[in-house]
Structures are given as structure tokens and as C-alpha cells.
Amino acid sequence: MDLVTTSDELRRQYEKLLLKRDRYRYLAKRQLYAYQCEFGQLIADSFRKKISCVEKKKAIAFCQARVNRGEPVDQNALRRYLADEMAEYNARLQEMIETNEAFRNAKAVPESELMKIKHIYRNLAKKLHPDIFPATGENDKLRELWNRVVDAYQRNNLQDISELEVLVAKALEDEGGSYDKIAIPNLEFKISKLESEIETIVSTDPYRYKDLLSDPTLVAEKKDELQREIEEYAAYEEELRSILDTLLMNGAIIQWEN
Image (tube, rainbow, N blue to C red; front, side):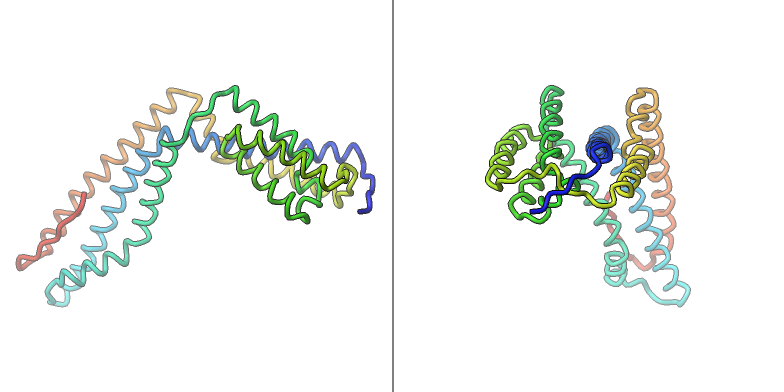
């Protein structure tokens, strides 16, 4: 393997930005976790009411079209129509429910463990990050280890990342080479791209959720807003139910699930 020395200053800047980018990605994920724990159930409840309103509006349109043509409402045809029309909405709701369940079941990690995880990750990234060491992407064993490191880091699993620290050291020793002087092409461009990526992360959600979550007043206001939204959808749902009941003639009955 040919070793080529790159600009030490640019390389250090690039490595620093890579670690910074990964840290902000990690923090953004933590903010998303906190946001879902705080508001996820209310958001799902609001969406559930919303799709109930959408379903009834579609049912009204279906029934009105047949009334206008002087045709009876075929309940089986209506149910098939609604099943097709609402499939995507219901899939999104189910995804919300499963996401909330996953966040509720997630284990809280002590701050001391988080610090250890971050420290180990930084050390391993300096040795194995594929954006710094192309050999990682070209070597199946090293690539697999790096993917496992990222996974353990994102899951906040101290045991796994500690074990991987040992495995990475052994793998690098087995390779019998030093990767610290492999050339990284287009460093200036990559540095600029990383700076732009970092700016995007810190200026958008979920990273920006921290501003909301750190203020108890804003959290309470957000919960009140979501609760009002649920109540408004519930009132609208009753209006739509009344309209639909008026349209359904000749004993046709539809059972709605709340």
C-alpha cells in the first residue's frame, strides 16, 4: 500500500469536522428521542382523529355521488373504497404507534455511560472512519467493524462499543499497517461540504427541538396546542358523522371505529 503524506493542518481540520458532524447527528437523534417521549402520544392521537375526519369526508363524497345519481348506497362497495383510500393514512398511523412504543420502551442511559460511549467512539473514529481511511471501505472486516461501531454508538450501548474497541485494535494489528498517512483527495472540498452539512443539522429539526424542550413553558404550550387540535378534530368528526347519517337512507348503517 502506498503511503502519501497529506497536509497535516487540513487533515486535522477534516478529522475535527467529521467528529463534530457525527456528534451533532447524535445530539439530533437524542433530541428526537426526547421530543417523541414528550409529544409523540399526543401527535399520534391528533393524527388518529384527523384521519377519522378524512375517512368520513370521503364516505360523504362517495354517498353524495350516488344520491345525486339516484342510486342506493352499497355498503360493501363503500367499505372497499374506504379501505383503499385510507390505506396510506392507516399505515402512517401504525408507524407512529410503533415509533412511540419503541421510544417508550427505550432504556434511559446514565450520563456517565454516555460520556464513556462518546469517548470510545471518538477514539475509534480517528482510527477507522472510512471518510478518513479509505482502507476501511475497501476491507470487508474493517468495514463490518466500523458499521458495528456506528450502530453501538447510535444505540448508546457501552458494552458493545467497549468490546468493539478491543476488536478494532486486534483487526488493525492483524492488518499490519498504519493508515494514518493515507492521502485524502479533495480535502478542501470535503471540508467545505462538511461545514455546510453541520450548518444544516444545527439549523433544522430535530436538532432545534432542544430550544423547545429546554423551556417548560414552551413544552406546556405545545401540549395545550396539540390537545386543542385533538378537540377540534373531534368536534369536526361529529359534524361529519351527522352529515353522513343524513345521507344514509333505507336503513344503511356504517359502524365507525373510534
